[in-house]
Length: 124
Image (tube, rainbow, N blue to C red):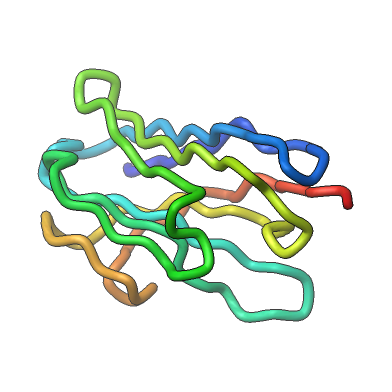
C-alpha cells in the first residue's frame, strides 16, 4: 500500500521561506518520478514542480520558477519542496504525488498516488 505523507506547511509572512517534505512508502521509490501540486480556495489544482527518479531532471510552473526548488533523497524515500520569496498567491494546500513511471510530468493524471496535503498560508 503506497503512502505519501507531507509535512512542513504552516503560516509564513510574505517574503519568507518554507520547506515541504513528503515521505513515501509502499513501493520502490527510485522507480517513480515525484511531483508537487497545489490547490488554492476556489481554484483548480495546479502543477507546481516535478522531478525524475534520479533527481537530475526537474520542471517548474512559470509562477514558481526561480523561487521554488524540488529535490529528492532516494536514501530516505523523501521528496522536498523548498519555497523562497513566498507571496500571498502561493497560499494553497500543497499535495505530493507519485508518478506512474520514471518520467516526470506536469499533468495530474500522470500521477496515481497522492498525499493528504499540507496547508501553506502566506500573510501579506
